[in-house]
Image (cartoon, rainbow, N blue to C red; front, side, top):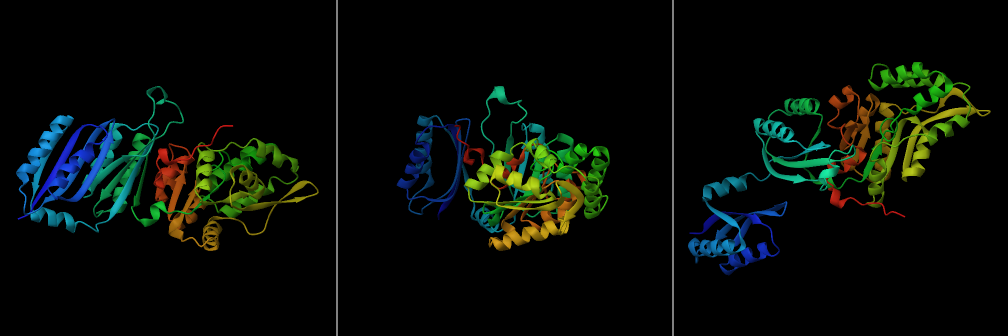
Length: 409
């Protein structure tokens, strides 16, 4: 009768270790049913589930493995696996799989403890844990732009998704971290279109508030903007009210405001990667086309859809032209671009911060509330508040070592 063994090997990593160990198994014509290997800080952890053929006994195999492991400075353990245990393992194929991503400036043990306890309490099991962020020198750990990201591959049937997501949200609020939870499916790494809100997403400010300051109505407009972003008043009504306060503002002010716009942390790195990896990108904004086109040139963006300010005789008239880009329009524009590019909605990513972004976030395959208002963060399936825009790459499955870097000079 064939024997099944689970081998667990650990110790200092060296070149050729896996080759030497597998060569011993090869001499006994052993079949490898499962294998996994990780190296953390030059320390190897290798696991194999193997089948010993009928013509061989496990004893000589184990003897040879033990001798070789000793000479290599490795520890090795053997666990017999019954046919029943193996059948159960095979039967677990096809169970739902999820990816839980923990994002912060620095990963703490408390964060991992809280998250993993919740995972276990909801009947799921962690298969693998992977660090997506790069290695960080100790002296740079406390810089304001550092990034830390760990991804958990989770298997099992989620008993109560609503309750689980509420627990994750509570942890993010308590510990000041971000937690993304998404299904692990084929679309995760074949996204092709990423669309963005502009104001307070791609840039750090609300452009209309900047224009209002120039017009001397800053406080009045800022108050209306906040109400709209929180979803307290209709976006179209709020836009009309705010734009009307700009009547008579000189056209030259648009260029003045555009030049002082600040890109959000990580925006340039994100767009450099997206463009060079062949993604299509778009701005779908309740802001204004003048500033959208300004960012389009700066970041090499494919599409811009926003509201157009009416200008007559070099002055703003206090009106916006055409159909207002509100929440419903944003979702329709996402569909329009995807259809034009022959991209399925499951392959799209949408990023925004306001209540008017929610229809777009809900329509996209991956919707991300970025540094969003509380009502938006609670309603969106994913949220990033602690890191910059380039953290979106983590949710798309990219590691820091896979990210492209701009060449200097």
